[in-house]
Image (cartoon, rainbow, N blue to C red; front, side, top):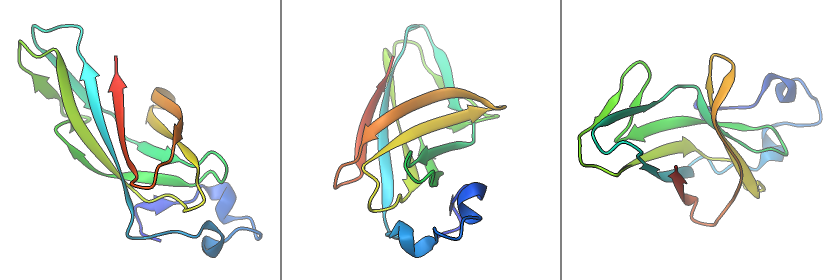
Length: 133
């Protein structure tokens, strides 16, 4: 297991679950391509506010964000020039347990969920496309 990925405290303390139960593929990464449909074609700005993670809803395992391409992370902003009706960016996360069939993408800012996409069905490639309205 890499440092970027961690189990929640409640799982770390349970004797019945250990890392071998999760059957991790440490080399695996999850790639999510986003298209953000913009309401204002006169220029805008966007960003993500860490922490951002993927979570296996069955085990509670969290996979942390490793890389963000073409989008800023708080406190910075990505400025979108006038004339764009959408903006594409990519987030790369560490792997999830092999037995995970679906996962949730969660962006938390000061204890409140800003972006919460639940029940993303897992595929063999671990590459996903999400449209944000």
